[in-house]
Image (tube, rainbow, N blue to C red; front, side, top):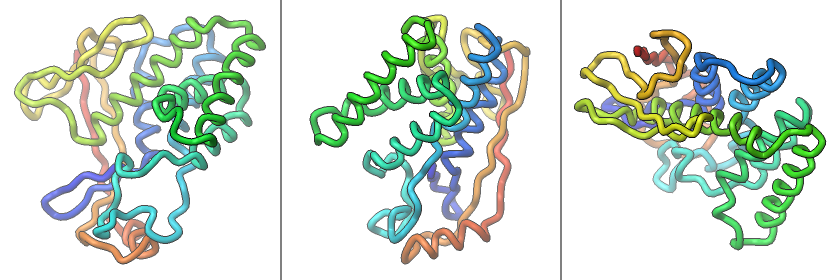
Length: 242
C-alpha cells in the first residue's frame, strides 16, 4: 500500500492502482519500436507491482497499528517470485522487462542471504537467455525498461504527494532517450509539466483511486481490510500541460 497521512486520517492507494497510473503516463508517450514490444511494455508497467502478499496477521500494519506504507516493509522474495512467475504467462518479452525491474530494485540486497542471491542470479541468467532468444540487444531492451522505470517513478511522485512546490523542479528519472526529465508545478494549484515535454498531447489528465480512512489504528489485518472494503473512494486527478 501507499499510505498518506491526512488531517482526517489515512489515504490509501493500492500498489496495483499505482501500476495502472504508471501505465496511463506511458500511454501518453510517443510510442517507439514495434507494436508487440510496445504492448508488452504497457502490460509490464501495469502489472509490475502485482502479487502482493496476503494479509494474514499484521502484515499491513506498523507495530503501532497504523496502515503500513510499502517503504516500511522488507523485501519480499515471495512477492518478487510471484511477479516474475506471473509475467512468464505473457511471454519472454514481458518477462524480460519485469526481470530487469526486479534486478534494478533488489540488486543492492546481494550478499544478505543465499535465497536472495540465488533469485538475483536467476534473473541475470534468464535475462541473458531471453535477450538471445528474442534476438535483441541489451541496449534495446534497456530503452524500453527505462520508460517503465520512468513511469513508475512519476506515478510514485504523484501517489505519495511529492510534487514540488514554489516552482521548484524534481528529477523523475532518465528517459528512454537518455535525457533527464524533471516535473514542475509552475503555479500553485495549476497543472504540472514535465521538462523537457515528452508526451504526444499538449495536455492530458491522469487519475488513480484512493480509499480514505478516519480510523487511525487497527488491531490486525482483518480489521484494516474490513475498514478498507467499507471506505469511501476518492478519485485523485492530475493535469499535465506543456
